[in-house]
Amino acid sequence: HDGSMGTIHANTPRECLNRMESMIAMGGFTLPQKTVREIITGSVDIIIQAARLRDGSRRITHITEVIGMEGDMITTQDLMLYNIKGEDASGKIIGEHRSTGIGRPHFWDRARYYGEEARLANALAAMESKEQA
Image (tube, rainbow, N blue to C red; front, side, top):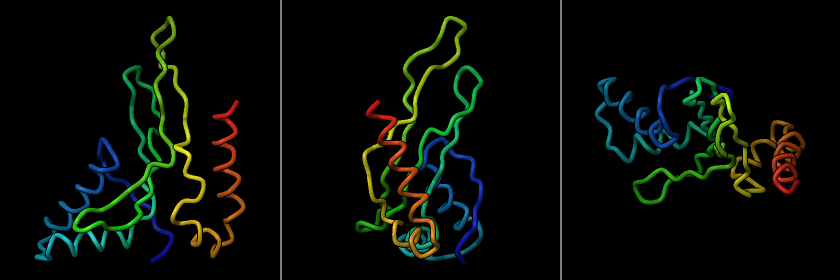
């Protein structure tokens, strides 16, 4: 079913995938691990990781695309990361969101299908131009 969104408490995008596997197993399903991972890969396009930083602020730290399977492993690629540069005199974290340079994510065709190709292209271009500045 397209268009769903959910929340999982995890510290990294990879841990999020592991927790999904664990939740399926805790549901009493006795599916092979590879099958569980294929179900997850077929169901999840993007993981958006939010974290509470040491100064108490919250930031989006990762936008990670789930791109498929390689053998028995789920493969991902980061589209955006939050880089901590330091902190100001009051201890507030100073950082920036950085593109990883992926100009055309694997879900591009799906964005086009739903009429969101231009918005996706603009968002990716904005991340790239912000980086060049």
